Image (cartoon, rainbow, N blue to C red; front, side, top):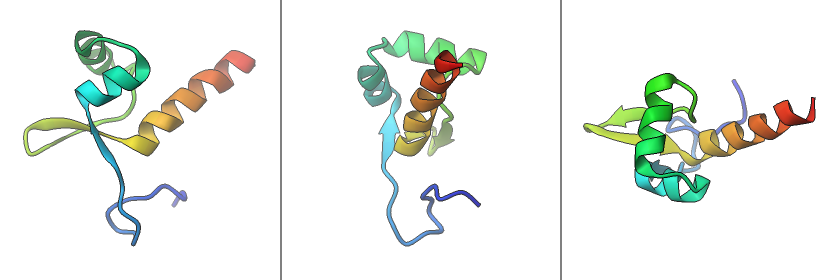
Length: 71
């Protein structure tokens, strides 16, 4: 298992809404929905009928994009 924090670990995780992630990535909510539809955006899940993102998944997605550019 990675060092990623989850609900099984003692430290709480931070969940972000689609709008919060869109603002963080400087995208519109519509762009985020399109990326989710295409499977090109950060990992997310529907919780209680609402799309949520773990903050660490968004950070990892950004880091992976920068690592891919460096190669």
